[in-house]
Length: 364
Image (cartoon, rainbow, N blue to C red; front, side):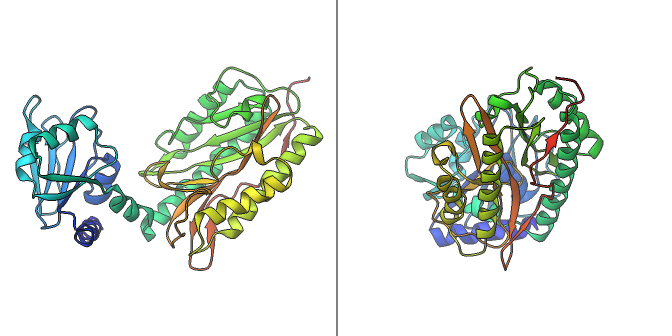
């Protein structure tokens, strides 16, 4: 699998007239050659060359690389060693693709050492490969999402206990561990009532009050792939406006999912959700894009936004997550992951989207 990915990247380099690509993103390196580590401030770099002479630059403190393809030379360096000078000497002249996450100080040192290079942002070459999930990746994403469904259902049951947001997150960590997941894929969002009106609310010690919406936005890592979903339930009976907001978001999310199929633009998928919310009078309160790509990382390159005119392709996986956020009152978001298929899409999450009222165990 890695050999095919590397070959596809080389083909892309040749088509773009790029001599070599410097891949620094640890997730992309793992995707391309199967080597995984987190380098911290040290240099970790995969040079993928159009002429086939690839190199992996590793600090001697990093785990050893084994099982790599024969055409990948391992270059080991020590702390303090001028590794950028070594890299500079190995590069062919001409266009050099630069990874979007490579720290600028490495790039500036390289440009000083090799003024004949033409650095270009070519991260899209790897991003485009990662966006199309293989059948094996698709199955891993299904498994990760199924486990996240179980975690969400377990957490919804706990809403009745009226726990502080922070304790709900602690409970979730244990749930994921029991399910065999490898921790959070992002910091969970548990938001009660008006807290939910902040799309990126930071969990605190607030407890739910009668009628509060409860935004549960959670995800985990499973076998190297991420899950992400959101459900909004209510702690006791919601008021009429909260019900109206919820139903509007649910209809918007379903409209966007129905719009997903190969060849449609991501802007049109976003428009399907946004139009429902605008027609209900809440357009100004839908403040973010409709979705993001996901896979090895919870947020990968690509999004479902009103500005993205790219077309959906079979094998892509992204979120559909419209929301309405009324400051000081209520927040509602509903999110599923979808896989683009030949005829439309497959929704990877199965937790009900009917309005759920959790009756509190404690008396008001």
